[in-house]
Structure formats: C-alpha cells, structure tokens
Length: 117
Figure (cartoon, rainbow, N blue to C red):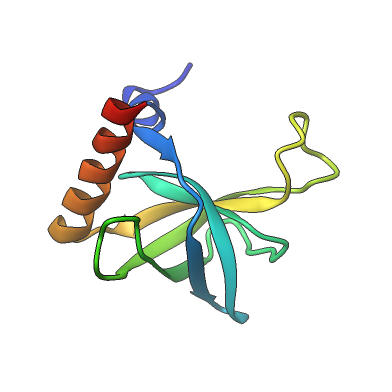
C-alpha cells in the first residue's frame, strides 16, 4: 500500500533535464536530472551512490536565476541492466533539508510545468 505522502511526492513531480552536481562520500559527480518534485529528484547518472548515503546537490531550474543547494539522501538506485522499463541508470535522491526558498522554487516550477503541459 502506498502512503499518502509517497503518493503526494509522486503526484507533484515533473520531467526536467538540467545538470546536477552531487557531492557525496566518494567525491562529486555531475549528472542530469530526469524529474523533480518537492520530495526529491532523480539523477540520471552512471555513478552509484549507496542507499542511505547523505549528499549535497546543486542545480538550477529553468527560469530560476540561481542554483539551489540542497541536502539530500540516496533513496534508491536504478541499474540499467535491471530496469524493467529501460529508463537508464541513476539514483533517486530524497531531499533531507529543503529550505523554504528551495521548496517554493521547486513547487512553483512543477506547478508551472503542469499548467503548461
């Protein structure tokens, strides 16, 4: 059974592809976002974080003049060979500490994409 919060996090997401820098225990890497919501972001990357690992992400959404810097946690990993839907490798990052500014910016972006689509 899916919890209400998990459903809400999935419901308020949109596809977006922008560069994302992820700084974790093994150093930093650059990937591309695939989708985003106020609950987190998917990082399409070959880099393999570990579920539970704490990271800091930096990215700029289209139309936002500044980059957002957010503490996050690796929630899950998608291995390209094991993906049933062929979505490519990457990792789901849940936002751990989301400032009011970052939350408002992400929410406004997602809602704007929903209205445009």
